[in-house]
Image 1 (tube, rainbow, N blue to C red):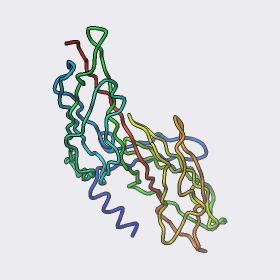
Image 2 (cartoon, one colour; image 1 turned 60 degrees about the horizontal axis):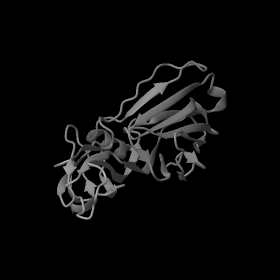
Image 3 (cartoon, helix red, strand yellow; image 1 turned 90 degrees about the vertical axis):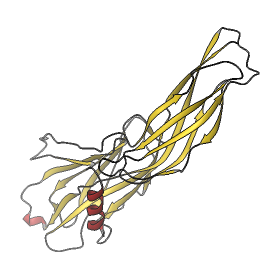
Image 4 (cartoon, one colour; image 1 turned 180 degrees about the vertical axis):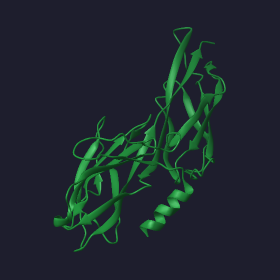
Length: 272
């Protein structure tokens, strides 16, 4: 099942994985990291039909979203915050799910709002700049496409080990796996890290899944953990096999989270 899932991901997507191998002792060999173009779900356009308004006047806000993710993206919040003296009303913004990107096709969604300066607004100056934020939050995920191959051998057959790492990114989050390879049949500790990157932020705990599930390789790994602001989330857990002979497993993990962006829109209010 895991092999089928990987094949489908590779067929549908631009690769979002990369790898870096560390050879011999602690010497690091330069690696490469490839991620999907763009930064997840992008706010590609945020503009207003007239950015200078008088009390009683209104204009139209246009927002364009483009999905660079290779999976459906479900939007959980899209609204204007910190509106100050301005009134914003929802005019048209649906549906809440954007289809996945496929090769050169990046699905888009256009949304419009009405923005108005109430008649009651009175300025004690000639003009007053107003800025507000478009708050966009959506469900997102990060899954490695190219798994880490870990060989398990009897202890007496292991002459030396090297540290192997896999790094993968989707423009919003970056995940890393690192392990000393090969592993003994009793298992090896695998080190994980996840960090938020890009121009947004993770707004929920990370939820994790580990593969393969059958046969199960990982033990005592966290299923969920809180992101650390400005830092990597790091943890370790054991990978082992219920075998008494050499075997190789493709190991990887997925993480699921909510991601938010809040670009700014400026409007100037002037006196009548």
